[in-house]
Length: 276
Image (cartoon, rainbow, N blue to C red; front, side, top):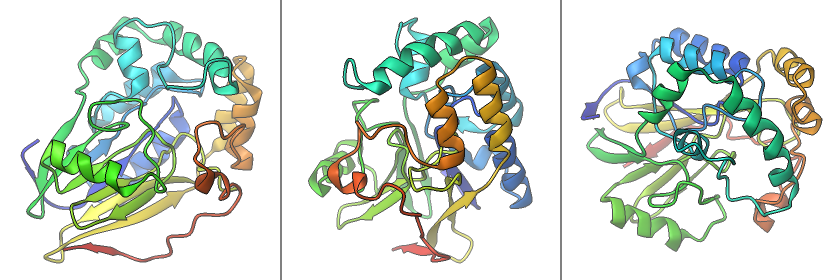
């Protein structure tokens, strides 16, 4: 992507949630962030009921995205979402409901667009080299959390020759700053962050003050419409309920540290984090 300047909006996991995407677009417009400076970490398609409408709205908006594991699987005509769930677990069972639904809803035009999404994006920003990945570099479905050992993150900075890695997939917003690099996860907008609220998360990078700053942000949206559309189309009821309760149906993918944070409202405050 070359060199970027100005405010940048980072987000992931739209999950076929058109209402959340529309709200995020309005935020970008309010903040005067051009679509070329908006980046999705993948999984535009997912659990909710409007995959085709969401893809077409994303295309019209003109933001950037990499392929998430869902897009990768769709592009390769696979029969599951490739989320690396435990076979036979609740996530695996529910994926057999929403993934075929999404696959059947998508037009040829949308499938062709999905197939062109890159695996990674790289750019320079504030004299930093940044790479955008879905799960991790070399493994699109690998879950990286805040509690994931720092050594596993730091090896990725070396492998990618990056100062900053922006990742998605795990569904939870966080940041880790170490001597060797910065790992940022802006969170997802299509589902809450298991914190007991219906809020969803994104991140803004800003170089306007002569340095590089990042801030975590959340927003509310018309989740009741999203919820009703899921129920009307026979998608998993428990996933629909998550939109309002803010609690995940299960925590199969979570490490113990993140499991203990279930129902605890995330609070980054208004703090801006400076990257030196």
